[in-house]
Amino acid sequence: MFLAFAYFLVGQAASTRNGAQTAADAAALAAAQDVREQLWHGWIGVILEPGQWDKFLQGRVRSDTSAACQQAEEFAARNKAVLWDGGCVPLATGEHGFKVTVRTTGQKPKDATASAEAVLESRCTFGGPLPPSDSPGPSPGATPTSPGEDDEEPDDEGPIVGLICDGEPWEIDPHSPTLPDAADLFRVRLSD
Image (cartoon, rainbow, N blue to C red; front, side, top):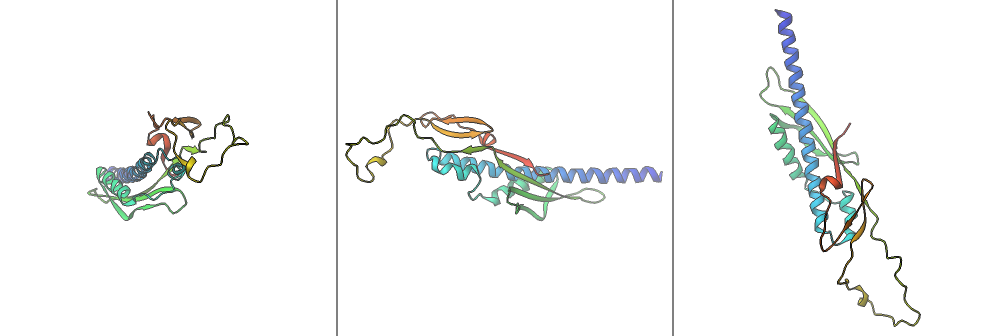
């Protein structure tokens, strides 16, 4: 009888520990996915300004970490846990992502604590649009223009090229864009 009771307690502790790890994993992924959405919306905001793309695609813009950690807190609660001991913090390792620590609530005989890290990785590179190869240079007798005269945007813009995600090129047509979604631009995964 004693051995049966001991096995029961060990099994219950393992289940509690697994529940805590599941909650930590879900919370960390939720935080990183929220930042992924923020970066995607920022990129959409500058879609017609290719010179701005790279900083969004490489995650070099400020994100709202409090909103991301709010998502982590909500996902922890869905898994019967709370943020614990520092809760949700951006990674300090140079990677983009979050470390989340949670503690289960209401588990018998004892609550468990677990941590997880989720990282955000860019799937894309942007080399910028290439100049047309058949564009003629200025002719020898051309009249020079004053600064600013040639800076006007052409009325008929062609597609923006140079975006490559997971080896696949994308063309962004300013008049009828088919855009990659956040998951096309960024991968979110648990850190090893």
